[in-house]
Image (cartoon, rainbow, N blue to C red; front, side, top):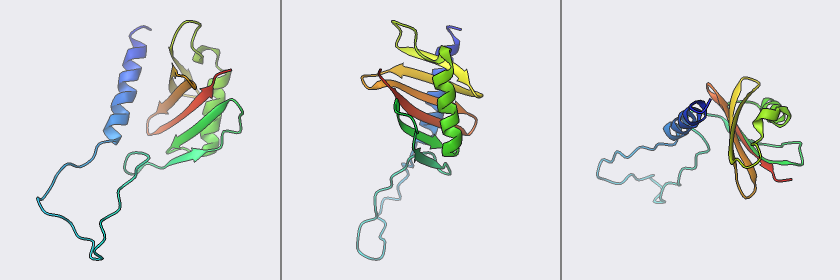
Length: 133
């Protein structure tokens, strides 16, 4: 079990980093848009092809629910599963946790705002903050 938590964190971090890369190739010249205005800066909320969105939590003790390639309704179900699953909350005196809920691997870390939680399975992920009580 001790190896499972760092391994799960490493896999989640690698997955997130793989989707956050950018192109660093350059042809040495500048690209013109034709209108004389500079191109707009890209803003990305997920990997190319991902469907990332903010969702209403419908919960007073959860904030910032984000879903990637999953509907908001399904994201809320995973969030509710995390809340109900006793093994998902960090034990007293610990700062990190991991658990499995609704076939999603969830990792949590204590922060000043509460517990930052990321849950993922192949091609889908959600994130939220469980507020301090």
